[in-house]
Image (cartoon, rainbow, N blue to C red; front, side):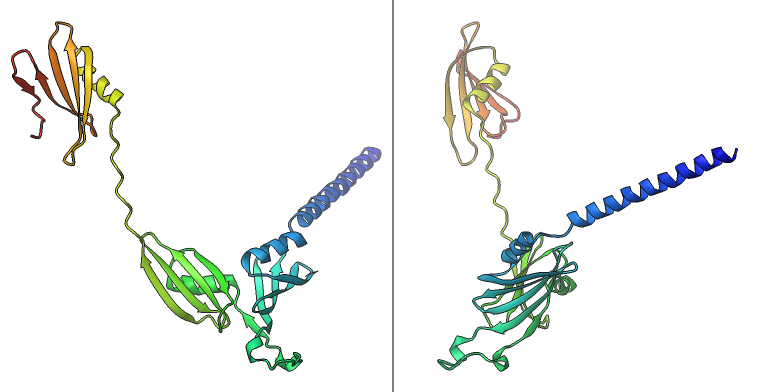
Amino acid sequence: MNKQRLIWMGGGALLIVVLFIIVQQLMTGFASASPLSEKEVQETIQERYPVDEIQQLSLNGTTYTIQFLSRTGLYEVKVDAESSEITALTLLEENDASSQPEGRADTKEDVKKEEYLTEQAISDIVNQQISGEAKVELVTGQDPHVYKAVVQGDNETTTLTINAADGTILTTLVEKSPEPLPETPRVLTEEEAVNIALNRVNGEVEGVDFEPLEEGSYYLVEIETLDEQEVIVQINAISGEIKSLTWDEDGDDDIDDDQDN
């Protein structure tokens, strides 16, 4: 009895160890697969900002720190390695060649360091004013630096410029979306018109004419019937409606009740 109990206890302990190892491996696999690689982080930065050169890139825990040069200055960006979210954007040094005396080297006093709001923070500011998904882009070619946010609505497009440092909305432009052009009605093909005419009058087609008119184009399909009578079938070129039947036997017209004129 005691021997059997020891066997069960040993088996249970072994099962617990195996399960623990499996869980550890799964957790390690998930953790190692999720962070962005250095190449992916560089591509993310280059897609979002006007990067001339990436000077530094380092990973601390789950946060990448990247310093890059653009034509407007030296920037530092922090990126969450798991979500790819930009968590911070800082201007470390601004290029201002026009205001710097010729031959003077930069000193620490010349370096201008300015914290910028993230794209997510700008999106939150925009959504307090306008509902909808905002496409946010940093514009660095002016002073102060601004974000441009565009929100596409059902009937209008709203473009905002927002101070990148303090989130102040500087300008708002609302443009009405152009009215969609009316669809061009589809015109029946000659073959379709012939089939409609033959479904109404049995016989052999002698000829087909197409009459394009602003008030309503139509086909004239001439048919010789089995008893050698001739009839002209007028068909609306858009709707396919038969407007009239004209027989040649006595010169009289047999016109459908739904003919407009």
